[in-house]
Image (cartoon, rainbow, N blue to C red):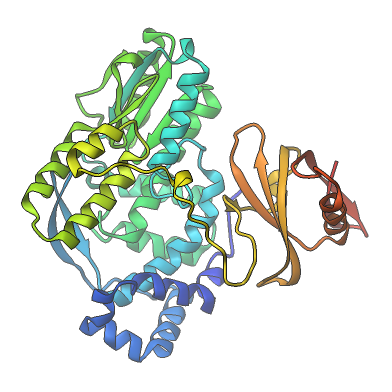
Length: 435
């Protein structure tokens, strides 16, 4: 596995530091706090100081405050850092996240930009729908006190397998070893590093070494589907052995059951032909609606509940609990027109080299886009045929831009199918072309 270096130069770029500052100080409450006001009044000096301490590895976490939070019926001990230190840690992890994204398998979704529980649920539903026999049984398990139980040495071994930037490794080591044992639940780095640990130890072993077809993970919750119960128990034994090697323990509630009973996962109960909300979420919403008297607060609760129910088959439930009909967006006639007149495309922006030799559908494009790398670029909207994922990429290639313009002039030119191939010219330069 090729290790990644020269990370810190990206971390300390002013644009990255400033974006981190904006993310950490989002929201009126943080901006109006005493520490928030001090940072706002002296932003340039503080960001410069943080950049310097990160660049030479001297950045230290001065301390934290413990708070207790009840989440999903569980009491969690959260560590809260100062806003200043959160800006620095966020700046580091923004870059680390970007480099780790291509290393994750596609069916892990927690704390990953552009994914999430609804993205993962779509994969599960599609796989069950497309292979009824191959997904007849489900293995479901999760890890006991995952973050609190992580072996710090094992965590750093995984970091060193992927990164070779010594200063970055030193900083991540400080983040990991902030607590006497395990890793902090409240630290910005913990979700990413937890994902990295399970990606190295479990995900890639199952997918690359064993060829497990239907495997899904959301943080430390794991689901495997198969046509055979014995096969699923054998996969459980493999996962258990791998986790035992890094001192992580699977909870006793592991089970193998028919998929038609419903998979209680990521806030929903997923059946082969429909999806329901988890019972606890319904009860919690109903209780809050009964307790809250403010109409403004009730509207906020309803909007949040709608965000969950619209991804399930819950129209009648939504009306029963809110006394409101769930409208379809397509029936509302709402259209957004950007002020700059430019088109907006769905999906993540990717590099052309990640699309080499993939069958894609080119659906549309926008001209004369200014990016950090220059002006006059085209933004191209594509759909990957194999996965159905929407992506987009920038191009400055005069050849590719001319081809897109020609196709645009054709009747029914878009969408069209193609494969992107690289072509070397002038020695070691590479261009990409439609074939």
